[in-house]
Length: 103
Ligand SMILES: [Zn+2]
Image (tube, rainbow, N blue to C red; front, side, top):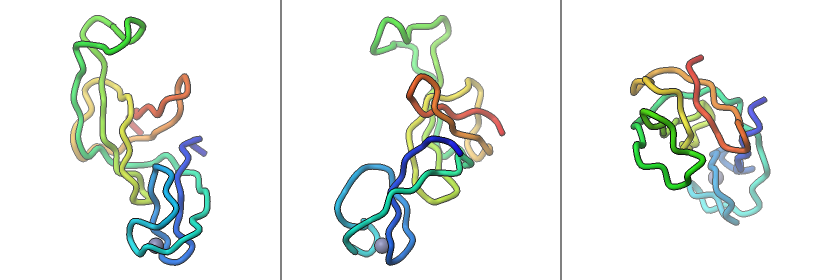
């Protein structure tokens, strides 16, 4: 598994990333924890050239992507450079952060 924590609605099966007491799709209460498979599709991608932290400052910048996981949740990830919108990726945790790589 990916180590990417999600929440899943017990009523409608909707998945989302950030903690909230009710389902954003149907407003049911009592979501259950779920782990993402890690498979997904790039929804948006860019390269960051001004790192917010000195340790993230790398020559040529680093990739950031919004990935729609196969479960339906969309998450922001560090990403391999050169990914394209619509490309299939695998998201895993690297140094505690989600990272999208080509599948
Ligand atoms: Zn729901």
